[in-house]
Each structure stands twice: as C-alpha cells, then as structure tokens.
Length: 382
Image (tube, rainbow, N blue to C red; front, side, top):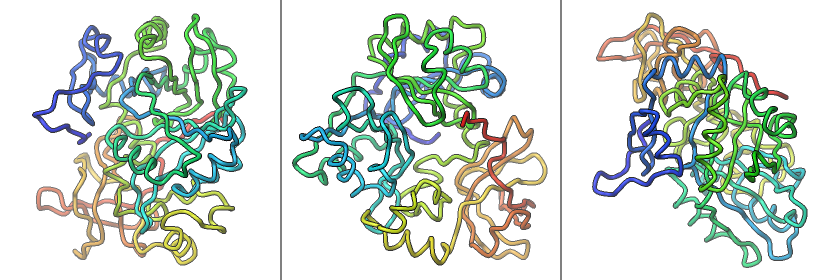
C-alpha cells in the first residue's frame, strides 16, 4: 500500500470518485490517484464479506491499452509482444487471457500485466493489456519504444475498471449478463449490461472466483450502482484488496516483485509456457532459462510468524542461529487464517515448507516457519 504520489502533484480521480465519497470512504493517495482504502465498516469486515459474499472494487486507476497490428493479424501483434514478455501470446485463443511480466534485459521484472487476445470480429489483430497504475506511464513508454513500426499502442484512459470478487460473484452477474457468468477462468467476453458495453474477464486478484469488468468511464457510476444494488455486493477498498491478495499468495509489484527479482525467483514459472521456456527470445531469457534449469539462489516463500505480531515489509529474516537469509516483502494480519502471514525472499537452502526461521521485529527475533502458499485456498472457477 505504499504507492504514494508526490505531495505537490494534484491527485487524479477515477470515474467512480464521487461514488466512494458518497459511501463515506476514507480516500488516500495511491499511484497518483485518490483511492478508497476502506469504507465505514472497516477493512476486516470488507475482507470477510468478499470471502463470504461478493466485494466490488474500483480498479480504474490501472492502465488499459490495446496493441494493434496494421495488417490486423494476430501473429504480427503477438510476436511484437513476445519480444517483451515471456508468455506464449501466439497461441492465445480469441478472448483468452494470460498473466505475464514485462522483463528487463537482465531478467528483472519491470511490471506484471494481463494480456487478452481480443475476440470481437474484425479485431483479431488486437491485444488488450492491463498494467499496474504505478507503472503505466513507464510501461507505455517502454513498450512503444520497442514496437515494430507495423504495431501501435492505443491507450484507453477513458475506460473504467471494476472487480467483482467472491463466491456470490457468479450468481450476481448471472442476473445481469448470463453469458459473462458462464465464462471459464481466464476467458473474457464483450457483453451488454442494461445497455452498457462491458468487457468482462473471469479473473481478479483476491484468490476468489470473480470478474473484472471494463466499461466506458462515463458509464462506470451507473454500472457500479447497478452491481451494488444486489444485497450480496458491498464496496471494498484497497486495504482489504491487499489483505486478500496476500492471503492468496499473489505478488504486488514494487513489493514482492521488481527490477531486482526474476519470474523464477518469484515462483512465477507457471506463467512461462513450454514453448517460450525452450525457445527464449524475450528479454532476460538466458537468466530465466538458467534459473529454471539450475534453480534460483533465492526464492519467494510464504511465512507464518508464530504468535500474533505481524512482520511488515522490510523485516529481516534470519536462521534460528542468527544468520541473515532474506527479507519480508509483504506482511500483515490474515483475517481468513486468523493470524499473521507474510511473503519474502530467502536463500534456497532454507526455503522448504516447515523450515524454522526468525523474523527481526523491533530488534527482537520472533520465531516463524516457511509455509506453503496460498494461505487461504484459491477458489477460481476452472
């Protein structure tokens, strides 16, 4: 939750800003935007509501853009993006979505992003990208500087984006757009909800089943209000979004992954498909292939501190005899597991689940153990 804008710059507002204010949200600076960190009921209640019902999140601060090939061919645009990310884009089916990373030449992660092959007739040579709010200007500049002349980046700053997450999300959406509710995990569709054009994908960042819904910014308040009219749905702020993704063992850019970490160190091997592992052809491929083959020197692990004290980002991790072996990158209280949870990087030889560690909190070593992730089970609809 540390994406604060410089204090002398005015904060940007999402299309849903007035809705948050009217709901009594506590607004904070995040990635240059005024964003709701919580509503009056508080983070704990919002977290539990999302796990048990359906939470509605404003994620309109994220960057939405299209990559378009002049010849309208999927192969042209896919190969252009594959020169920048390690995912297999070429073999995406229409409306299929993948998670990947923009990589630096040394294999460090510049950002993580979602890539969807557009399925609308006549737009097969389009890719839809969603990038992190804090990195979107840098990402767009990086991508544009490296695209062939035949491929262009089209920013869509006029779109809103919201996430409907939780076990009731499917039933809620089924009343409004049955075809969207029928989507499998990581697939998308263009649908109408009360006459509003929406691009819906079955995805999210809470570990729960759910959807991300893109629409025109001027339609976002109407759609938001329509979704909140369902008694199963409540507005949820960034505070609970963070505790939900931490329990789900999901990386937050700028914290758990950054330019100093590779996808293999971060445990994101699954996001690099077999063809790309073998062929390479993306920035940092040599390092990524070496770490897949030989193992990375350090790896991201889950950590369960003993007792009730949470270990925050930056906490030093040692062996029980005091040898420093890593750092915590995300940590806090996990409401679903009813205890503190953390993630961090440790030397590979102390990364097995069950390994005893110490966390140096306020100068004192507190016992902890390496734990399997996710801390709360994923409930994606496969």
